Amino acid sequence: MTLNYSKKVIQNFQNPKNLGEIKNADGIGKVGNPVCGDVMWLYIKVEKNDKGKEIIKDIKFKTFGCAAAIATSSMITQLAKGKTIEEAEKISKSDVAESLQGLPPIKMHCSNLSSDALRAAIKDYKSKKKK
Image 1 (spheres, rainbow, N blue to C red):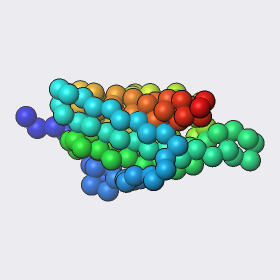
Image 2: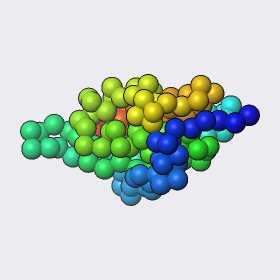
Image 3: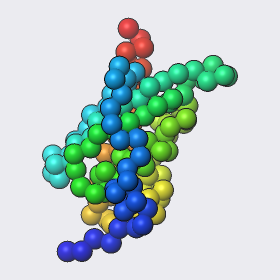
């Protein structure tokens, strides 16, 4: 079976943006799909902007998975960086797929993982903030 990936998917797989880990991250999201074996860790650093809104100042990821999983991880970081927490929470799996100019249907679950990882990192940040 041959998968036809868009140029954007291939670019984000071969040269992922925001790859790595943030030491002392404000929020960490870890999600996985036991069916395909993909696992994603997403790290966020949050700061207040000049209007006093909390924004994602820095975001990094580490992904163990297929080309689509790595590409969607790279793309979610690009979509979320600099956004307010509220804006970042609204980034959907279809936003990720559209930004990558589409994913093969069999790989759509990968974009679900990246948006789930972002929401998990934000949830972790909010729970730490309450303490």
